[in-house]
Each structure stands twice: as C-alpha cells, then as structure tokens.
Image (cartoon, rainbow, N blue to C red):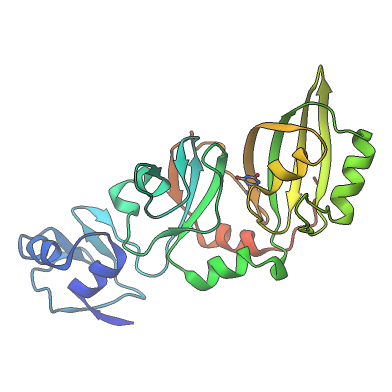
Length: 246
Ligand code: URA
C-alpha cells in the first residue's frame, strides 16, 4: 500500500503527526537506508524499510507478546491504575494497540496486544475455540474430590449465578497440604472464569498464570513486564488448532 510518509508513521507509531513532521524534517527518518526529509513523499508499506531514529518501524498490523506482571490492568486506560500499555517500549507503542482479551489485575503471564481487530475477535470468539492454557495454584481441596472436579470441567460447569461454561480441561499437577496445582485449558474467556470455577468447588485461586494461547507458549526468555513483537510463524501458531490436552 502506498502511503504518505507522515501518515504511515502516524499509523504505525504512537507519535503525533506534528511531532513526526518535525522528526522527518530533522532527518530522523530513513527509507531503505536513505534519509527522507519530505513528509509528503510516498512509501510502499509492503516492501519499504522504515527506520525512525534508527529503530525499525513495523508497517502493517502489530502483534505483541507481553509477560504480564501482577498489578497492571488489561485496558487501554483506567483512571488511577497502571495499564499493560505502560509496559511497552517506545518502539512497540501504537495509537490503536489494545489487549486482545483480559487477564485480571493479579493474573500474570501471556497477554497478547494488537491493533488487528479482526484477529483479536477471531481468537476471543468462543465459536473459534482458541484454547487458553493456565497454570493454577489454589487453596483447599475440591469438595466432591478431584474426579468430580475434572468431570465438572469436562462437562461444562454451571457457575453459581446460572452461567454455563464451555467444556474445559483440568489436569491435576500436585496436591499437598490443602494446596493444589493444576493446568486448565479454557475455550472462552468469561469474567473471573477460573476463579469462579474453583470457587464453585470451595477452592480459592492464589496464583494464576496464562501459559499459552492456541498453539503458542509464552516465551520463557521474557521476564515479567517484558514484551516483544511476534513473528509471522508465531502468529500462525496462535490460530493453529490445538490437540494437546492439559
Ligand atoms: N480466569 C480468571 O479467573 N482470571 C483471569 O485473569 C483469567 C482467567
């Protein structure tokens, strides 16, 4: 797609048009290795290599994997709160970036941010069944026993309040002294879903981490609070039908 240089930079960064014009005129922008000072010149977003102050600018939709720490809310703005967007470095900031799906403020792990609305809708829609895998630590033993718990997950749990969950997977990892650890796979994202599912069986979730979306696992090299852009192969993996069980 052919775009004016200032328009392209405005779409693919979080910097205002007037600020961008100043940067372009000062020689901070290069296209395919050559400095371009004319903001009206056109670039081909499909093939031109754009650098702003030496940093590459990704033309086209952006997909960011964040290892979300506790204490940040999954929103673009929230008065009095820190949002996950604040964790992005300048090179990954964009005006229209948003979290694709919510994690609770105290939940950690794989959070996807994108400016591709259709992609976000596709991975969040319960109809598409893109699995989300979580590690859960909870206090208390499920009333009725672990088998009843796992059965309720696989049959589609009825939550107090009458909401019916889609069938989910539960795999016990350990159970010691009133603390259990489990891996849970959901195919939808209802409000506080895992906490409510555990609470329905008398267990309180004390730690929750999302490990995987679709077939893509959280990059273990990312410390909490760190993020990076996804590669085209990784974006594909998110939508790849998942056959692994928890
Ligand atoms: N289920 C929850 O209860 N919380 C989350 O953040 C994600 C899934």
